[in-house]
Length: 299
Image 1 (cartoon, rainbow, N blue to C red):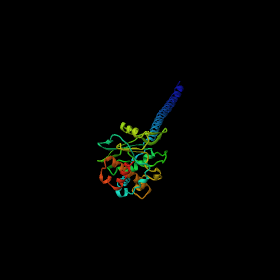
Image 2 (image 1 turned 135 degrees about the vertical axis):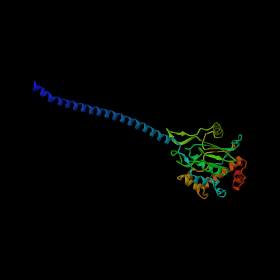
Image 3 (image 1 turned 90 degrees about the vertical axis):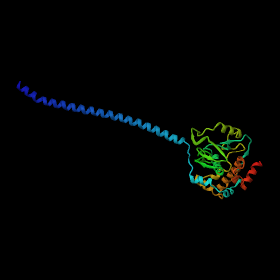
Image 4 (image 1 turned 30 degrees about the vertical axis):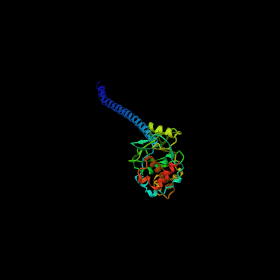
C-alpha cells in the first residue's frame, strides 16, 4: 500500500503537467481560430471596400468622359480677339464669307429691352466652332464679354477637334445689344449620341423652327431682321491650329485666318448695326461697315 501510494504521489504532478500542457495547446488553438476569424472578416471588408472604390472610380471616369470638355478661355487669347483695332478689322477680307446673312421678317426680337442676337448651336458642331470666333470679335465692338469658355468640336466629326470658344456660362454686357445663346449638346459621345448640355427655351426653339426649317446649326438670329445658318467661311482655314494660335492669327489681319475671321466679323458687325439701328455710330458709321450695310440691304 505504501508503495502504491508512493507511485501515485509521483504520477499526480505529471498528470497535472500534461493537463496544463493540453490546456495551453487548446488556448493556442482557440487564439489561432480567433485570429483566422478576425483576419477573414478584415479580408472581406477589404474586398468590399475595394469593390466600392472600383465602382466609384469607374463612375468617376465615366462622369469625366461624359462631361463637356470646356475650360475657361485664356485671358490673353480673349484680349487678342476682343481688342482688335478698327484699322486692323478693316483689313479683313469679306469676300471670304461664303454666304451673307439672309433677310427675314418678323416682330422685333429683344433681350433686356434691347435689340437681340440669338445664337443656337452645340459644342460638338465643327461649323459652330468656326462661327463663334467672328461672332466674339464682332460682338466685342458693341459690348464686353466675360466668362467665355474654351472647347473644341467633336473629335469624331468633320474638321475634328476644331478649337473654339464656348458660350456656356458666358455673359455679354452692352447698352446696344442683348444676347441669348444655347449649346444643346456637349462634344462627348455616349452610346452613339452626344450628351445633353443646355435645353433651349420655347422662344429659342420657336425661332429656330421658324427661320431654320431644317434645324441646322449654327443658327444666328439678328433681331429677326437677318439670320445666318452654318459656317460663314471655310472651316479648313483653322485646321491644325491650337486655340492660342488661332487667337494670335486673328489679331494679325495679314494671316489667312485673320483675313477669313475678320472678314466674317465685319459682315456680322454690319448686320448687328442693322439690328441696333446704326448704334453706336463710332462703329456703324465706319466706311467699311457702311459699305457692308449697303450690301446687306441690297439683297
